[in-house]
Length: 462
Image (cartoon, rainbow, N blue to C red):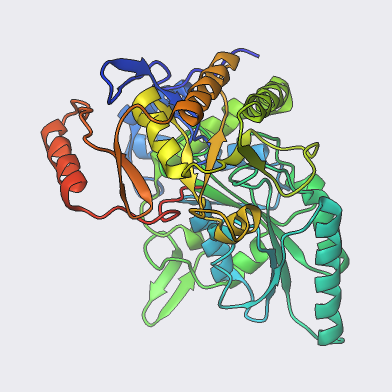
């Protein structure tokens, strides 16, 4: 499969030690680079940009038609059923909060403690059954079966709606969850299933109908379309019965105060002028990846992910953290720590001295990271390297070499610790000359000099 062209693929970044290197982005699990085809598609439509569903001008007609066509691209990408609704949102977090808002009042929610906070926190105003970290995929099925059976016994012949929420792939370990099997367990007890597909969608085909899941949420910024759009796809009945997620123009059919006749979904939950360019970018990415995800991309990423783990295994004192057996399928995300070395220091030095971006912290999955690291871990943080389209074998070799060098010799620059984060001290790297470059330079200097840095795990991003 030919390499996907990415914006910034040849971007050079400054080093604290002087000079520049081509940047190496290994933080795809947080935010993937923009696909060149996505950027070009947005640039192409910009001259035709107009109001959606609200204007008589020709650009408005063009954008209105394309807005609805974008829904069909998302529907095809997710493998949704013909009657599933497609609601455009800001991101996965927004999508899952929308779904939580739309649940029936008596709905019980079942979820594992392994989830990203976006799929852990929105349900708390409901009755939530928190399941522990499973030892294996089979154990996950057993835990869910037991929890649903217990809830069914407690309810007797009564009981309300039930929803099982789970990740398609872990944003911490990359391990792929047995979605279809868990959905089958849920179905036996009359429960619906919602899948946080933020990490799965860029790496594996989605098949809502085949898996028999009811809802899928995902984000454009992890799908090579960082234009502020995401989607919630799923059965319309709960969404049509719920009050609007936002109240405003476009969500109504008729307003005759005090009475309001709300539109059905998707418009019911899309009040205000839509992020048309973001939706168009998301749909373009879905079309771009739809065929490759069903051909060479999966095989290519599996090969590179295996190479990444082999290279990391050679570094003394390094532990790769996983929930399950090493043979279990996973996307290209690896979380690890190095004995006796602060994860934040390694992350800062990789960036400042080698131009390599990884992620450090608890990845907005604090319960899971705590479980993986154990109680005795020095700083409660880990490192995460994540790959996607555009990454090569040479990139992985370069990363492994830089990491091994830092582990063996330590950083070549000095760093100061502020809270749980590390920053170069001093940091001579100039900010890029952008249209507001002087302002950016000034604010960056002010932040370095005055602002306290966030505690570990606060800026988690996926």
